[in-house]
Image 1 (cartoon, rainbow, N blue to C red):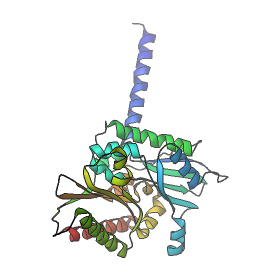
Image 2 (image 1 turned 90 degrees about the vertical axis):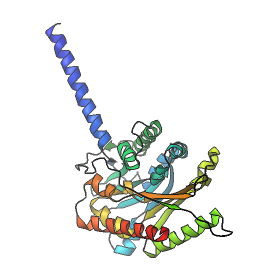
Image 3 (image 1 turned 180 degrees about the vertical axis):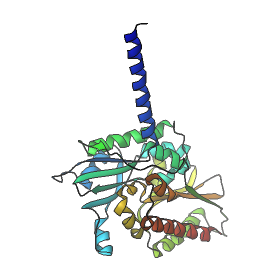
Image 4 (image 1 turned 90 degrees about the horizontal axis):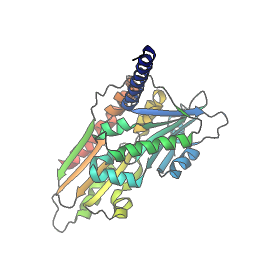
Length: 318
């Protein structure tokens, strides 16, 4: 073999090795930020919502956080800061059918903010984050299709955009940080399952709201997704998007990307052939570990909020 041929083969192999390493690095990243200059303010949370909707990622909530922040804290960190929730019904159904725990990411979330340099930014979870946090196999084709759809939506929303280099190192070591609960259901005399879940959720909502938690979205998955596919194995399947101003305000100051995890989704379901109810959400260590958050001003409210939610649920199912 000629020396020039060997040289070409070596360069080809070396280039392939670099590309593979770059792809592996990108897969291991948990948060992705897509960004572009927005000097004329033509890109808004509303135009981003329209781009996502047009590709089948239905935005079920797009909340301007600066309004309540200004009222409550008298100061905002960014010219624009929105938290939005989105989902694709078909892919959500496919994933929930195989992995009920995917409800912890239903709907998915993103933060939208304009920084001091007038760049508009969108933060979403990567494929790796979705797979790791819910413990869904990383070769699942529907999860990969979901991640691809998000990439397409980001590119449509920000036509001259690019992925921003994040100078953080994840510390999760592939742990999921799921927080799960289950309880055996014992119905009272003349009590139906609908009465049971209505009473349970009314108490849950009341306890949460009394501590300052908000529900910017509640999804009746059975009615809104499963019925469309005539999938009737559940007595109920609901998800709550949970938010607390006293948490997201301090966290967003240094970590606006954290909106990829917020509002957090809490799922609750019962299958018809079981007498057990399952609940769960993704713990705040996902926020902390994926962004390597170290400041106490962010960590303290995150952990306090998680503790409040856990205590409410534990007290209710004792």
